[in-house]
Length: 303
Image (cartoon, rainbow, N blue to C red; front, side, top):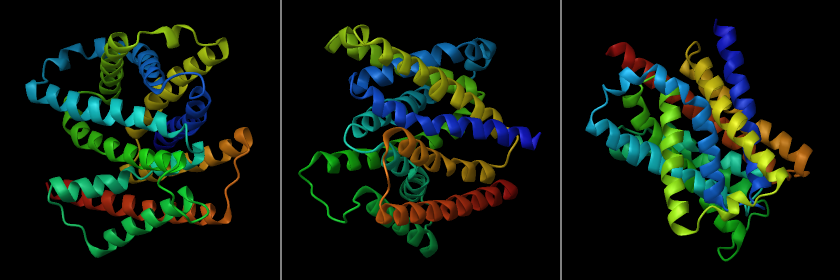
């Protein structure tokens, strides 16, 4: 059962590894808002049956649950974060984006310290600084920072994305006590696409979306079906039968997959500086995840 869980999780992260590649390809033909809208609409429709299966459990949600779901889980951790990421990919390489997106555990620790008053020890602070150093080496391969160019904007947006993503786990923990993960994801996708659909309709209409080329349409369908619906479904199915620590380590494979794909498809080659930065980020995140998982296990055992 555990081996099957690892297999499902690996399928999910392999599909996620393709995401920045498709985001990059679509960024030349569609506005970011439309890409995110279409992606979640497709993914939400595919996962919609899970909502009907668990429709009775939806009645257990109260007003506070819906507020948390809308503001933190959907608005911040889904809509804003993914639009920012889609804008960022216009200015930076797919592999650089994915490595910077991997900083989510770092921001979860920071938010836990700020809002949950959890103490951050010296070891964790050092690991966070190392992750930021690695991010600098990856993002600025010539070691110089110029704030007046598009690349800098892309890097800042890429770093902002996991910050907004980090709000998701706080709310998700509460909601998963009442709903299955696949049901929650389906609701997340459908509500996000509904809000974005209304926004697009009221601002500029769907002309850009309805006039895309056949190639872009195929890429968009692949993005919605495989990198959105199936990736989440496989990963969370695997998550049910493996340890959180194992899942955390498996997630570290995503940027490696993206780096390989970016090299094979887009001929993007990392410099020595970027390679060193990548290793620093992955090692720092490995220990951050390991410490956080251990602390969570100790809390659950105590409770």
